[in-house]
Amino acid sequence: MLKFNYLWSILLLVTIFSCKQQEDLSESENNLINQVPAGAITALESADDLDILLNDIGDARYVLLGEASHGTAEYYSWRAEISRRLIQEKGFTIIAVEGDWPDMYRLNQYIKGSNAYGSSAAAVLRQQERWPTWMWANEEVAALGEWLRNYNQNQPADEQLGFYGLDVYSLWDSLEEVIAYLDTRDPAAAQQAREALACFAPYNEDEWAYAQAAATNNENSCADELAALLARVQQEVSASAGNEAQLNLQQNTLVAVNAERYYTTALQNDAASWNIRDRHMTETINNLIDYHGSSAKIIVWEHNTHVGDARATDMASAGMVNVGQLVREQHSEEEVYIVGFGSYQGTVLAAPRWGAAVQTMQVPAARANSWEAIMHSMAPSDKILLLEELRENSAFMSERGHRAIGVVYNPEQEQGNYVPSILPERYDAFLFIDRTTAVEPL
Image (cartoon, rainbow, N blue to C red):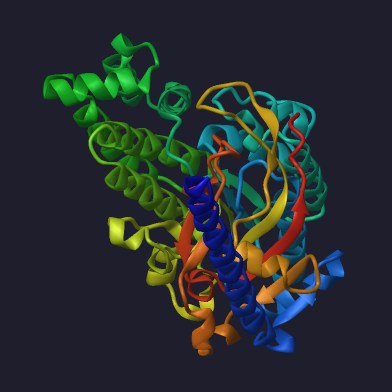
């Protein structure tokens, strides 16, 4: 009986301490909430509510729009609405997304009037084969694709909006696109591209099998063949008048080179392979700006972990950089504007492991003292928060957990889904949707 009473007392003390700690956290959060300037926050209910955000974006040429998951409908729909207004009101002519270049280039052709890859945006997007297809083959992106096609019909050919992929994964598809283009224009270069593709033939389109073989024996590496192909393609592009077909050729070749580097590095060093990927995406952004002209403006859609400045997270201590950091470093403060996204709870489309069947999962309430928990306690429920003013307040410049959900997700293991972040340094604005729903795949 004594032992039972002793254990019960210990449990009671732990409970009291936990409740007191929660009270302290709540008080701390309330103090933080009360310090938000009235002009820095507004309700987010309709497209008109984006006025405060558009005004704050000002004359920025690089607008980076994040997401806290790849499977949340509201992140896609609000980014689409922001993009429409940036296109119509501020003259943006490029959207670049965290997708494969060949897949997104087919959508680019569709919105510019071609039916070569399908008679609807949905039909074009359904052609994607690399998992996870739902990232771009979903109802929200299809609806935006139709809007963009209608928009482009009323624009001069040289002012039509382009839609492109930034990612580095499409090694095989990109090489096949290079061969198809060169076959009709430079048979000798096409043969060189075939030889590069043949180097990968023993691995049956398995990037990791190739990477393992190359890591085991350098003689298995195809890096030299790809580097020579890129040099030849760059000569061809620079020797003739630029057009979008040549941009497609150049980018597909660049993807193949950097994909090979990414996969071989990933087996040895996660941080280094991450940096290869984000540097490739940044290089692609720069190439798109160069192609469209010095006055071009670009909208970037990627996960918060890519667009939210890595220097304001624990990624920096791991030696990692990201697109948001690199774009800020390469351009003036006035030219770059980063918008983060988040939510408190809801549902999300994800898979329990890589390559598994996708499913709608419950997203639990955000953990205490996270940025999401603070946003949840802050009226109104759905909101836009401008962060520049908060940088002057030391209370907001502390590091707190900020939830990040990938294509693989386990709601029961949430601890690893929070990135320690100084929010006002990571983004310029934050869109918070308290309760979100899963994206609808095509």
